[in-house]
Structure formats: structure tokens, C-alpha cells
Amino acid sequence: MKRNCPNNICAASEFIIRDGTFRRKEDAKIIQRFRCKRCGTRFSSATFSDAFGQKRRRVNSILLKLLSSNVSMRRAAKILGVDKKTVERRLPFLAERCRRLNRKILNDHRARIYNIQIDDLITKENSKLKPLSVSLAVDSDRRLILGTEVSQIPAFGVLAHLAVKKYGKRKDEHFEGLTRLFRSISPIVSPEVIVKSDEHNMYPGFISAYLPRAKHLSFKSERGCVAGQGELKKLKFDPLFCVNHTCAYLRGNVNRLIRKTWCTTKDPARLKDHLDVVVYHYNKSLLRKATPLLSGSS
Ligand SMILES: [Zn+2]
Image (cartoon, rainbow, N blue to C red):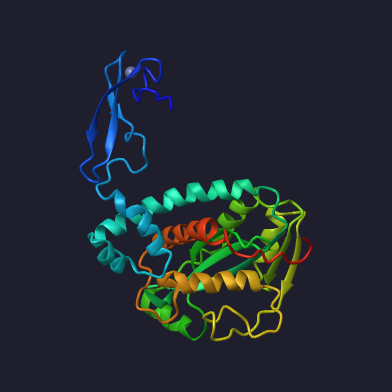
């Protein structure tokens, strides 16, 4: 592998020579050092790693699996024998890495996605008076999760009045959330994609704006059953099974999305990070052996 000098003025590879090794303290790995003959800058094969400077890099891969397997952040810290702050700080790092890898997976299927389903999953920030909406899109042929976006929404139903009294008016950012979701999926899916969703009044506008050649089919919302935490429906045939099943999967495997759990989201940005980690684990590892659903036209 050719290495370039990290010094911006050189940025050339022809002056790079090996310059000894060192044993990294944290994982006892032997790391090759290099030196630039032109400017004298010394660096190592670890300088360009995204985990550069981390003192607990051994936890990264197992933490990804734990966070995708219904383990809370505090319990993950206990299992790994690290401080809970390490896990807190590592979550945004892992999310960034997973987002990058996930883009790669989705790019491999670019313009070959013909059937998608979209839905929103409701969760909360600390209290049911502060709900959050997770908008998600799935490829219903391959079961890939194409994207998730978290947005805050005001409390609704019987809690609406109480929520305003206690926390004041809560801004509805669902429009922005759906905008981010559609912006991210529109370059990946085929222009003639078939979009299935429930009868949410905001979906048709977004579909005609971002996927003008798409065909939109909407279905009546149905009652949930107990299995699948209310996400799987009491129907013989559920036209939105794929997205509902994915919602049930997320509720079952992301600790803070479980109904009636005592783990809650404190910061919506961290929920987005957590979801990106889970989505990568799901798309990469779990779908490898899964049976494709192959619905509709394919
Ligand atoms: Zn140099």
C-alpha cells in the first residue's frame, strides 16, 4: 500500500521510508512507523485510521454487536469492562463509521430498488409528553433498510394538553425529518419505484416532489397485535408487512425503542446514531442469510 506524507506541503509517496515499529500499548499490536525523507515528518500505519487516538479500540466491534442486540449503553459498558462514558463517546464514532459503510452497501444496489415501503415509528424523548418520530424506508424485495430519520413531534391525543402545560409548545420537525429521508433515498431507488405506505397525509407530497415517476399505493392502517410490539398487524395478509416487520425488529433490538422500557432516549441525535449502528448491522450481517421476500413485480 502506497502511503502519502501527511504533511500537506509534500503529500507525495516517493519519499516515504520505513522507520522502525512500535508496540501499541492498548492492544499490543506491532505498528509500522514511516518517515518522509523530504520534510522529516514521522507517522505510522495507524495515523490514518478512523480510530486514531482511541484508547479502547478493542471494544468497537463488540460494542456494535451489543448495541444492535438489545443491550443498553450502561449494560454494554459493564459487559465490556469500560466506563459508561467510553460507550457514550464511542456511539457517535461508531455511527459515523456505520453510516459510511451503509452508504457503500446501498450504493451497490443503486437504481435497482423497485419496491419500497415507508412508515413512521413513534417513540419518546424522556417522557411520552415529548414524542419522537422515526421515519424509515425499506426495500421490500431485499429487506434492506434504506434510511431512518429521527424528528421531534408534539404530543398528540389525550396527552397533548398536558404536554403543552408542562413543557410548552413543542416544535413539529416531522417535515424536516421526511425531507432528509427522501433526499437520502431518492438517488438510490429506481425512478419508477413502487412506494407502499399507510394513509399518512404527508407522504403523497413528498413522493411527488422527490420521486415524481414513482407509483404510490396507500393502505389503511390496521390494528397491531401483541407479537411484534404492536408493529405486526392483525391481518391474514399485510400489504405493508416488510416495513412493519422492520419496525418490530427495531423495537425488539434497540433497547430504547421497546415499549414500556425504562431505557429512554435523552438526546434525539444519539437515537439517530444508535439506529445507524443497528441498520448497518442488520443490512450487513443479518440479511446475508435471510430469505428475500420478493413481493409484487419481481
Ligand atoms: Zn513530507
